[in-house]
Image (cartoon, rainbow, N blue to C red; front, side, top):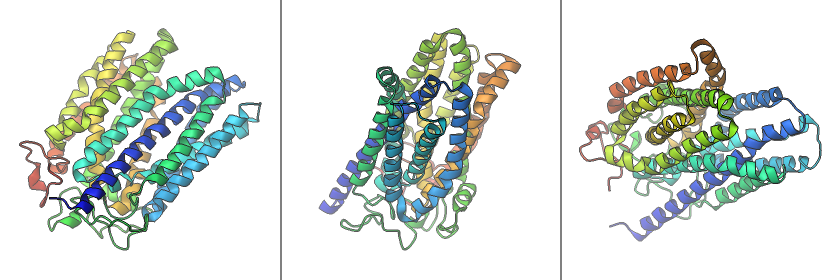
Length: 461
C-alpha cells in the first residue's frame, strides 16, 4: 500500500503534467494563430510572397542551429529558467509586433521581431524536451506523450481559425493573443512544483523528496524509471551511465548514434516529417489551384481533427497492444491512406485519405516519443531531443521543393507514390527490428517483450 508521501508525490506529479499539457495547448494555439497571419500582414503592407517565404526558411534554419545550443544549458540544470525566459521574451516580441501593426514600420523591424519570437519558441521547445521525464513515470509515459500530441493537434485545428477571425477584426489582435499565450506559458512553467532537472518522476525510483529545492543540477547521473542504471542487466537500446559525457555539446549526437531505440526514432522522425510535409504541400499545390483556399483549409482542418482523435486514443492502444505491436501495426496501417492519396483528385477523397493518415500517425508518435524519453538519461534529454528535432526539421525543409519537383516530373500523384514507397520500406524495417529494440512501455496481455528488460518491465497496473 503506497504511503501518504508517495500518494502526495503522485498527485503533485499528475497535477503538474496537466499543467504542462495546458501550457503546450495554449502556447500552440497562440503560435498557430499568429503564424497564419504574419505572411498576410506582410502582403497587406505591400511586401511580396518571396519575402514571406525567404523569412520562413531563414527562421527554420536558424532554429535548427539554435536548438542544440540551448539544449546544453537545459540539460545542465537551467531548464525552468530557459523555459520561463524564452516565453517572456517571445511574449515581448509579439507585443512589439502587435504595436507595429498600428502603423507602417520598416520591414527589418517586422522581420526582426518575428525572428526573435521564432528563436525564443525554438529555445523553449529545446529546453522543454527533458521536462516530460520529470513529470511522468514509466507506466504513464505513453499517456503523457499522447496528451502533448492532443494539445498540438487541438491547437492545429483551432489556431488558424482563431488567427483568421482575429485578423479580420484587426491585424494586431492575433499577435496580442500570441503575446498573451506566451505570458500564460511563463506563468504555467513557474507554477509547476516538480523540479524540472535532476532525477525522474517515478516516486519509487529515486524521486526528489518533497521540499527539495527545484531545479538543482544533479551531482550524479539521474535514474530514469526502469533505466539501465536500475538493473544489473541493461535493456537493449538504452544508454549506459558513464558511456557519454553529459557536459559535451556533442553528447546528444553520440546518444542518438549509440542507441538502437534512438536510431529507430531518428529514422521515423525524418521519414514521417518529410512525408507529411511533402503530402501537405502536395495537397496545397493540387487543391489550392483547383478547389480554392477555403476547401483546402477545410481538408487540412479535418485532418487536424483526425489527428486529435488519434492522439486521444493512442495511449489506450499502446496500453492494450504493447509498444512493438502498436508501432508495427501503425506502420502498416499508414500505407493504405498514403497510397490512396496517389489517386485522389476530389476534395472528399483527399479528406478521407488525409484523415486516415493523421488518425494512425499519433500511435507512432506516442510509442517512439515514450521510447525516446525512457532510453535517454535525464541529463541528456534536451540534447538528444534537439538532434532528433533538427534532423526532422531539415528533412521537412526540403519537402516543399521536393513536392513541386515530383509533381512536375510525375504528375499530381507522384509525391504520394514516393511517400508510400518510403513508408513501406520503413514498415518492413520496423517489422524486423521493433520487437528487439523496443522495451514494453506499458504491459499488455501476452506481450513477450518482457524478456528484454532484464528487470522490472515498468509500472504494471
